[in-house]
Image: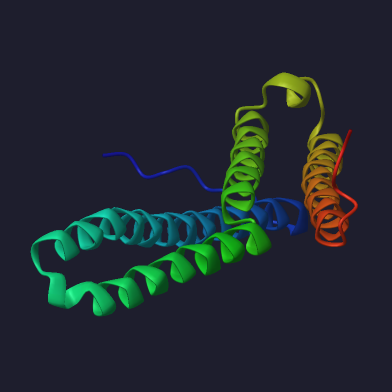
Length: 161
């Protein structure tokens, strides 16, 4: 198998790779958190009717089952609150989208394609820097908007007529 080509050195390409790694890691972390919480919610929700049906067969369990099903309902509510507060699903998809857009820029740059096709090396580096920072800035703006919307909703101002 041939050796992979040498990657460019310098602050612009290093920044690009650093951002790809950061957004990829954050996306994976948010995805895992979201899926773990959702699985626990699904299991807890599935147990509630099952436990409720046990009281029909075992009348002596009625008080204990009521306590457990109530606790499961509280657990589901808490987990939904955590999901809503931390925005795991939104962060997962936004971070993944940004990581993929950054990878797209990386491959265009390495292949001297798209906007990098006719640029000389210094122009290509400057263009890459501008485009990477635009993508990162765009994602940050989206994140800020989501946080502000959550704050407004949390203060009761999120209702619409």
